[in-house]
Image (cartoon, rainbow, N blue to C red; front, side, top):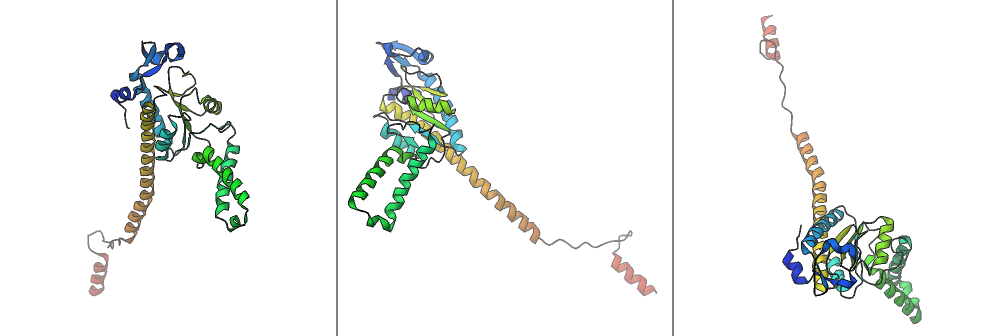
Length: 278
């Protein structure tokens, strides 16, 4: 499993927290010291928490379930989208649509509408529409794509959420908690870690810090997916090998069994000698 070193976190500025006056007292266990009125995060604890989170995310990916990445901060949008695309996981980098988890069937309807527009565009009847109708449908499609394009493959509720900045994504956190969905999150010194299942104490404002941590999580997901693929390949090959062995066994001719009498002579030979004597 990929590991991030203390030096990498330090270089990325993951240890910088917020001003002391903005701190959340619940973050005290993760704070190393205060320097010039700014809290410094204990990176040793960050490493431990990252390893725990990475291990859990790897198992979720290995089981074939989806992890939804949420990062609508300006400095995190492109970084998260670029990295998460590589492992085929859903992500939200625009505004969080309220009720996305708690009202999931409605979100699915909107996604299906987007796909139906794509289907219509390929249909011959598309040419019969007026310019105005095409423009209206195109605008509607663009709006849906911007909001829901990255979760088009999410056919059911995700198994977990990974969040950058729990304060900004508080609605997403609340919805996940309400449904009992585990939450992984980068939590800064001004945030409340209570209610977060896997807390990663680190700077959630610096782009390098976000890139490093999200990258490590994505690598763990990729590792889980690769292990799943390898296991499925072995399972597919096992019955083939078994059937080949069975077929080979059936084709092998059995040796003839010659019965012998108590003296050790062949029964056929002994019968011939008795005939001659008579």
